Image (cartoon, rainbow, N blue to C red; front, side):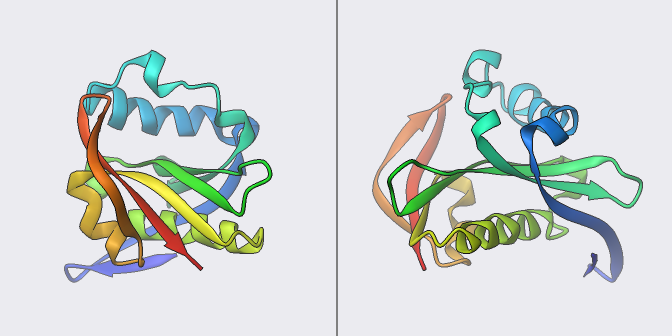
Length: 154
């Protein structure tokens, strides 16, 4: 995938992987963004759900992990939960987050989910709104950061 931004080209790819196949790369991005940059504790970050998720993994043309996200498939429900969306700082503003979210939404559609929910950091609300997500409920604290639940119905 080649994306043009600010008159420059950025080349990267996004693929859907299982935890088993992508763990070291997924861990590297999440540790850099959530744990080191945002101060999330290891206990909060590693919630034990990753093995049951599908993960979107963004790789640079050199094969370095630059972003990730995951989708949790609920049992006996019509929707899924997107979470752990992270892009390394030097790759922000280059549509990596857009490519990751599109891949996760495509995964949800391929599984015939009626909707997708997520818990967005407040500063990311405009990003998710562009995809049609709508806020639900009040702002709440998670990992000492303000969040809001959002939902997209297909």
